[in-house]
Length: 507
Length: 83
Image 1 (cartoon, rainbow over the protein chains, first blue to last red):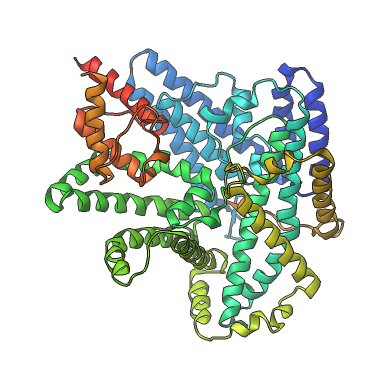
Image 2: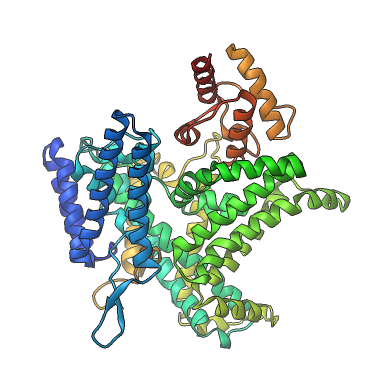
């Protein structure tokens, strides 16, 4: 039951209607039952025992932490949280990286099936356990509620990774039927369907043609393919988030945002504060900060400061911790080296190189009368960041790290920008009509993202959905109906057609 | 230590960490108000504040403090508990 499928829409419509019909106290029970039903029919069946075991372990661990605290046994408290985190991450590693499997009669090993939403419920529950340990989250005393928090059905597709202390209580409090809340949630879902079914599915055709047969596509084809994949990835993942967050919003439940117009970032660091935000926050709070606060790292920092000076000492320790952080981010995407490079260490290199060469640029650019501030400099930085991200995405989507390197070599092997305008792109799997729909849709997406960061006449920065909501009723309904019919007419879906699974669903 | 004295010393730490002598913080100052106060620099700032006041922040406090006012509150509490 893909969330872009007709079955999901029927399931969600029935759940939404029942949700506002049942008593307020029964709403979370309906969500709990709905999440179990969704998980079962989304293709995982008995694999539901994995998230159930994860929630059970976390429930027992947090209960043990509370008991140990009352008894004044700090060591036992630490042991309880460590056991839970090791169990959760251990199962994740066994299934995802070590491809742990069962020995077959013929001597081969059959990898165990990976349950839906594995890394999302694992990180959500592990973060909750560590927050309880750190004293910043209340312990959930109802195991069914904890399981609902871990596997709330929309988040099982691709997240977002939830933080219990921020949005956990949303699931259990009563929600009154509110016309504005429901319609806004549904509007956001339509926008997500537009991104996924109209843009992502078309961009995927072009990207797949080039990535799968890259030997035939030198020079500008490679860069066109990389940009198409970046558009595919962004509209796939952020479109999924719009559907997920919109569905939750229609139920009155606020989920954390995962995107904030990432392609307007001026630096790679800023990009990661705007792209897959909840993963970045999780890695910062539970990997990066704790690592820098270990006795070893703090001692190393003090020693380096004494020997090399304050600035160098600080920078070296941070660079080392960031190396671990970016390796973890790369590994989260998958055990393959292409992810460790493309979504991890390459970004670490970008950030470190940027920091280390900054003093050089600060000296050289003014001497060349090139301004480092202002709109021109910002535009340059945004384009540079976009190009760097695209290079990383070549690794992400290529079959292997070796293929990615070969593609990048081919990308600079020939100067053929004419292929972008002489009709050659029409041989990549989309006819001119589909190309035109893709181009217009990407332009609309760009304008919507731009309007979301530019201030209006009164100087307020508002998302486009809020701007539309301020219009008169016929205008706003006309807009949303046009978008809906655009998706119905031009979306890639329907009987005989199965939209590709969301890319981040595999993580 | 009075709250004014805490702020005098906090201003010195902020100016040193962010290399900007013009910084003056108050209860409502957040990371959005200071150029360079991102998640990387936050942990360096925390270490510098700890060294200045001879205290130790808990991990929960590090990730939840929303502004300098909350930081000053925690510092005041820790100093009061020590004396």
